[in-house]
Length: 110
Image 1 (tube, rainbow, N blue to C red):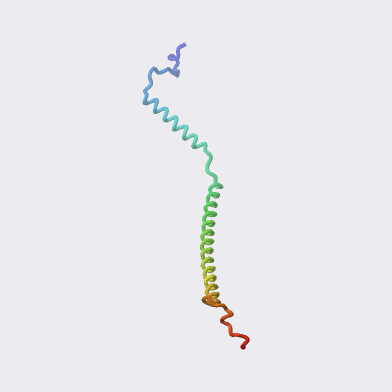
Image 2: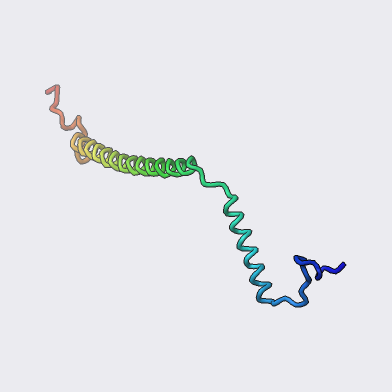
């Protein structure tokens, strides 16, 4: 039995063109990549929602941090002003090395 006598029989080629071989290999690889891309799972809507939520939370945390930092700096200024005013008051009370007792009028006259 000879394969060549059949009408649709395959015959082995003696030589194959190297360019054609490279081209066929490239087509096969392209087909495989496209097949893998089709079989991949579609990105879920839930994942998109979660990423949007992360961005939203991140923005809120950033705003909160800025507010806290500005509040802390304002509080520092207020505390500083109060301390300075208290020091000025104490300085007026105690004078420049003088004591309150020396500033009071004498109670007993001799």
